[in-house]
Length: 127
Image (cartoon, rainbow, N blue to C red; front, side, top):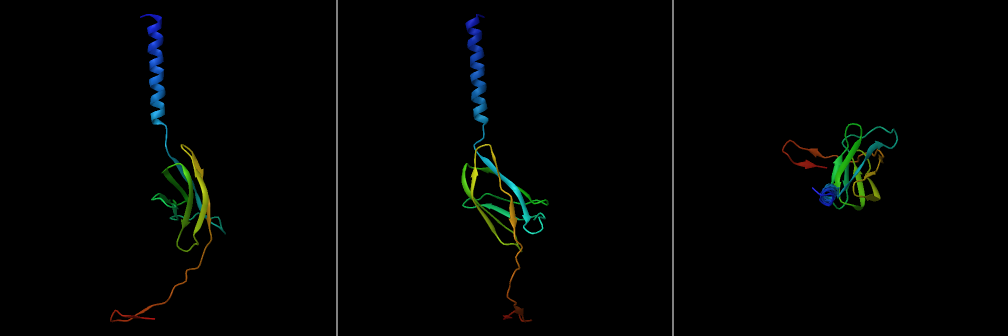
């Protein structure tokens, strides 16, 4: 095999490898962080974190950590809520390809106010 053919074969292999690498490059990013109680700093397991305007979201694990994968690049509003806590929204969350946007959230405990309803034996209710 001549030296020119060997160089050409090597160049073809390098170009193929480069194209393969680009094909595997990511097209989305992720959002991750931790949800804690604003006063105590304790984790809030089960807190819901949603990317506003999308169907993307996650629930915090036992240590309060969450991860939202496959988020298209862009700027988003993140909302977090949990029963017994006030909702929190974070604007201008920037997601970039192959990057992790870290957003830690602190929720303030909030008393739930409800109306008492009395149920009668016949199934009717009165207030």
